[in-house]
Image 1: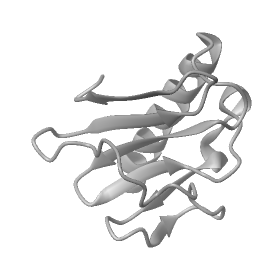
Image 2: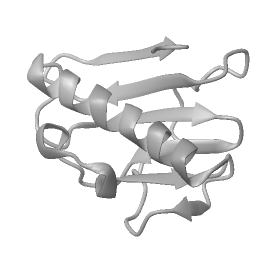
Image 3: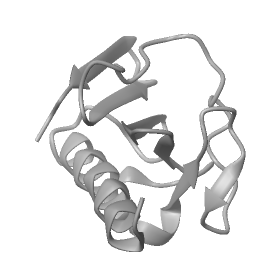
Amino acid sequence: MSAQDLTDLRSSVVEVCRRASAQGLVVGTAGNVSAREGRSVAVTATGADFASIDLEHVVVVDPEGRLVEGELEPTSELGAPGPAPSRGHRAARCGRAHPRTGQHGDVDGAP
């Protein structure tokens, strides 16, 4: 992937995080979001606050969880069970939130 492709992938995670926070789906750092394209997975860093997240709070890892780009640690739930971005689509997003009432969801092929 090119540097611009990685930036675009990370930007999609930032967009979803901010939207989830604005809609009251998550509070603060409760949850994570990832987006996958090919062998690159952009994922929120540990402790990222969804309301104020920026590109520096999203890192890129390979499918084995090794850091590819970014300086922060990826979410501590990187290997947690749950929805995984689909291999059948060019790009996919997935999120996990920890509000008072549990919710878990994914969006495949989201724009």
